[in-house]
Length: 198
Image (cartoon, rainbow, N blue to C red; front, side, top):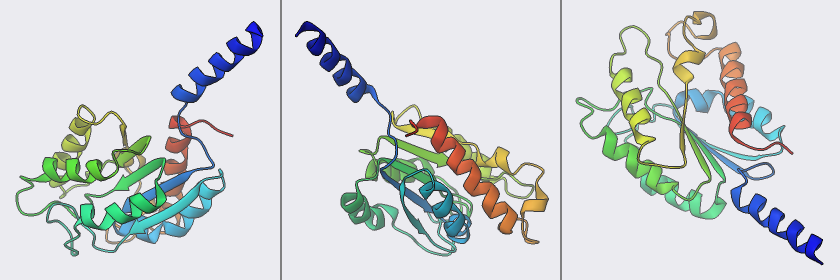
């Protein structure tokens, strides 16, 4: 009887401290980079047993950046309530953050507040290519948010594409098919780094 109780106690400790693992829900939120990579992202992440929902739009921005004035909190709230994702991966900021970026910290916190019950949130950094100085400011705020949100990890997308023009379309921003696969593979690997495998 004592052995059974010890085993049950050990299982309870493991259950409480476990990280998310498939099968479970992964919500991917982003702009045109996730939009154009949706098939690759879905196929690769689902191959590990996850259920995947990609919510991404061409021109989607944050804090006044981008072509779409997306109210992420309003948009994401019903999706999060319905799907209750274990993991959320966010790729926002490629399109900047408005004229001054003064409200980027508040905007990041509002988005993170929407997914506060997820076990893990991974926010990908923005590429700091030449001529895109605002990306560094966004990346600083993404990194700083880790001090305020216990479930947040930063994914180094900037590093994934450093000196990799071969993965980009001629515009230097959007991804060619090889770049889409590269993005999806790195998202899968960072998920694996932070979650248990079946």
